[in-house]
Image (cartoon, rainbow, N blue to C red; front, side, top):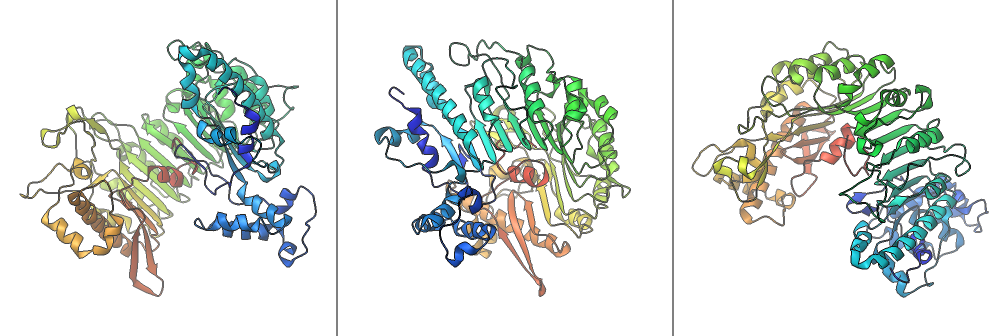
Length: 632
């Protein structure tokens, strides 16, 4: 870091091809739908070219550029050539190339700048409407060693300059729509106040750390911050000790002032809020108080709360829940402490989507759902059951869905709690006939996911016959009966998506002995029937290519996929609109020839097993495609 000039690194922000999908540490950061409009990029200047292409409306030009860029192999190369034609073509190409950028200040990205300073051209910030700030935490933390304290001090100075410059750049971009601030180091009041002056209407905070319990208020900020979408993932808020977080001796500082002032700035315009509530250590053990009223969020339509919601006081919770919500995602702990709050507010007239995970208090959730018969999307998962006597969805919740009260329901995901008695894994889970009958009364359903939670057993808990060194095994407990399910589900003629989660299948070894069904996916025992199944369907070998598998496992994967495709085909025969299905951890697309009902095609979507957990949360819950955590 010695001799490092942060101003030079800022050039890296603009010297980028801006790929369609930005990925940072395995996280998809892309949220834009296309390029900026040329008129916005030109910033009021007239088009110089009089050719017919540039006589078209900006919307059509943007679509043309998007179509070029969608060619992953050649698209960006073609845009580079387009940019060389003339000034208008350059702006048109850059409207897509630079529409999404990532500020990455890792050493690997800084190195080219350090060895060739001043040689990289800069582009206009008007081209950018999506930016992600991502700092390299491991590189910075390497300086924590006491031996290099002087280097650490210089690195902190450089980081502070870089952070402040980045905030100024972000605040000056006239067409910025989305900003992700992914920083695990301290952010001070002045820097954050600068960020509030940006024109972004979507803001995501990831991993932020605060030095002091400061607030946001004029004159450092404007009187309002007209955000429409806010995603807060700043779980920990500690005072800095010796220049870095000391995990052995954290000294928490109050966080109430910051969040109170933040919501006062953006609350009046906020339409979507996702908040990972900081734990009680960040508030000195006291409840987090916002000192707001239910009228503080008059436009809030989409709310997702997770984290330590018990650190919020009841008035703060009431103020957040006071908006005209259309979608709501809550952790199960909410119904343990804030059930009275929901009763006081009453049912939401416009609520369409409800997501609650790992439910303990099923009765309270059932009562809440009963009041919202206009729901269109319902996502519920039950916490582990410890005994067979614990109430499940069958006896308490599913009956609420009967009686034709939920005729608007389009999407339903229900995952039962596993019967995970210690030392006695139970493989006999099944959905009761009454529950299936009730679910199949919901003929408005267009997508349905049913399943059983999958507990994980360590090596010491395994049965002797499946024990192995260093194993952790997922015990799938739903020995699924597809024939029985089809009899019920064939009533849901509008289904387009169908998913089974935690399903397992019976198998035998070479001697004909029945094996433990809970470990079906881990044992991969190949029998003569598996070999025959694989040989009869050679075309499927391309979709069962696990490069880490040996020949025997590859044969098992091949035959397993073949059986899952046969199950999917049998469902397609009774569900004419079915387009996508997941069973046996194999996602598949299903097609039917409109001119020949007997002609069907089923295409595997992956070359190996995939539980599709992220996709299911996106399609059935509230998670966005770029959601790292996958929570709800």
